[in-house]
Length: 314
Ligand code: BMA
Image: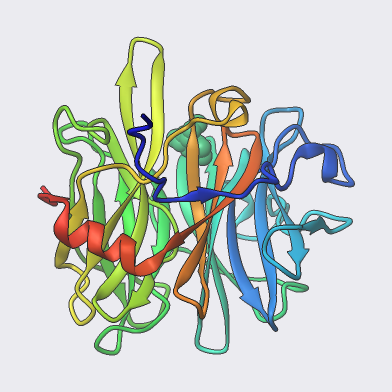
């Protein structure tokens, strides 16, 4: 008898959907992509390691969200002049896309000899890009911006580093997208739990009738290195600093060969998910920091898991 429960996330049979072999310029990996819909088509902003170990961001387009074609040239490479150049010199990584106002905000990790911090840029058409500001100091990764203002302010989930506490998810607010503050911690790893080592924001939060659904990553340390998995939590619609529930279980863990072995083994890592009109959500993840994968889940089921199979946010 088979006692395996049906998977929460159904993997697409054609995974991996994009690899370095599909890219028309030399790269070693394709992973950790932000994804959104623009004019009815899917746009994927993926990260690639160059063969010097530093990363750039490229674009791929799709009509159905499964079959993507990469563009001829990368979209974001480290700035070579101006205020951003000093902080992007070691590469740009892990972009998230937030559709808001009349365009798309892009947050990405900027690496340099000064550490890692987050840059904010905007596009209206995925053809041209305007860099807006560096929106954190060093030691911050994984910023996702809520796709609506809350009480007149932009809101974001972020992940500062800390030596005292395991790395946790915080919330911050801004009136102008440039200056952020009013920060407080909203969710922490739980000891001897699948996410006990660190957690970080994943995909741009999705609005549902019962709250903002956030797909995040959690890390567990083992004798064989760390394992990256995905989980879900739900934030209050009016006050997203309130976590209404965190699903006790992971929703996705490395299982396919290209998730177990690659550039960094045992990693599934998300930077983007696209909700569909039929109540499903397409979740995109990097497999082993090497390839891009996609799977489908039911949004109401994910919300139920947060509310009815939950562990404390702290
Ligand atoms: C994190 C980030 C991610 C990466 C993950 C697994 O710290 O660097 O970009 O996917 O590690 O290597």
